[in-house]
Length: 91
Image (tube, rainbow, N blue to C red):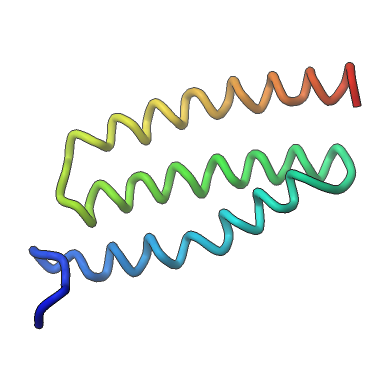
């Protein structure tokens, strides 16, 4: 078959595409709603983003890019804490 990614990574590409709707839904929920819902949506978006980056690692056969997913995971915890401080003070 032509047009498929090499190395049998079609399943990983499909998994990556299936992660797009939850990511969009989480981003939409973080834009509106009560503060608690926004915070949970930001956490969900970070988690889905990490899984999407890990799926991209396998889909594109680039093992070194898993470092980006790990870095994003560490930074998402810090970002969610900063978001909580912002929401407490100014919202």
